[in-house]
Image (cartoon, rainbow, N blue to C red; front, side):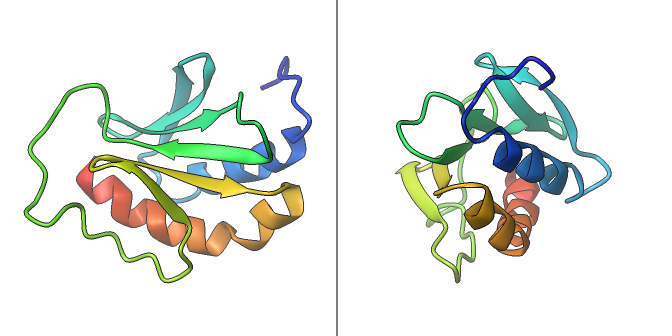
Length: 117
């Protein structure tokens, strides 16, 4: 992060702190040349080449796995998730202010997502 040059670095930093605060088991690393987060498997990675704003990709690690009948069943009352597949979704934020405003909703989503990761 110290060397990251990105127009939304402040928002990425705020989200990074929020993700790490979701659960004591969350650790960070680098995946796809971007800040990534894991418990047992990686579950979230910033998409630093997004055309606009800040994008966070939620996934279930590198290995294909059996999914529950009907999908992951993530409760998303704030409609943050844009599903990219049965096991992947993107959360997008316009800017740092938008990211900060939606941190509580993101943290609620991540707690559910981690249960599947």
